[in-house]
Amino acid sequence: MDRQMRSLLAHTDHPIAAPLDDSSVDRLLSRAVIRGDERVLDLGCGEGAWLLRVLRRHPGVTAEGVDVSAGALERARQRSQEAGLAERLTLHRTEAAAFPAQRRFDVVLSVGAAHAFGGLLPTLDAARGQLAPGGTVLVGDAYWEREPSPWARETLGEYEDLAGTVEKVIADGWTPVYAHLSTRHELDDYEWNWTGSLARWALDNREHPDSAEALRAAALHRDEWLRGYRESFGFVCLALRRTTE
Image (cartoon, rainbow, N blue to C red; front, side, top):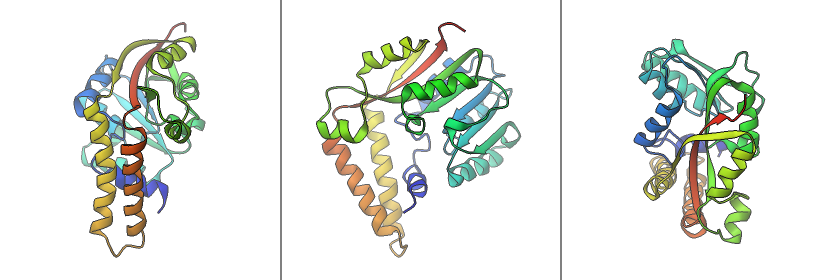
C-alpha cells in the first residue's frame, strides 16, 4: 500500500495527526494566534486540520499549507470549500523542507512533521527562514519520557528527554513561551485511532487488493506500540519565539 494512502486511512478519525485532543489544539493555537489577523504557515499540513481550525476561529487570518501528499491536500481543499474558507487558504504540494515562501509569516506550525526535515533543529531552521520578526513557531515532536528500550531507540530515533529537548531548543536561539505535554490519554487515543481506523478500513474492504496489507500494517504498528515504545514515548508541543531577532 502506498505510504501516503496508508497515512490518510490511519488518520481518518484523528485528522490532527498528532497525540493531542481538541482542547489542547485550541489552547496551543490561542498562544500563537493572538491578534486575529496573522499570516499562518503549516509546514507538513496534512489534511489542513490545524489551519482550518484557526481559519474558523479568526476571520482575519490567512493561511498556507505545505505537504507532499496529494490525497491529504485534496481533503484539505474540499473541507475548506465546504466550510467557506477556501479563499483564505492556499495549499502547496511540495517538500516542506524546500518550500520557497514568497513572504514571511507571523505564525509557523510544524507539529509531528520533524521527520520531513531530519529532526527538531532542522525543522526550526526551516521555520526560522519563514518567520516574520516577532513571530511564533509552534512545533511538536517526540521526546523520551523514560529510558527507552534499545529497539525503541533504534527504530524511532535518538530523541532527548524533556529537559534535554528544551535545552537544545534554547541553545538554538529560541525561547519557549508555552508548551503542552501530551497526556497518557492523548497518546493512547492517537495510537488506537491510528491502528483502529486502518484496521476498520481493511475489514470493510476485504476485496480490495491492499486490504490484507493494511490489516498487517495495523497489527504490526499496534504490537510495536504496546510492546516497544508505549511506556517511554512522549510528545511535546512548544510555542517558541526567537530569543534575538
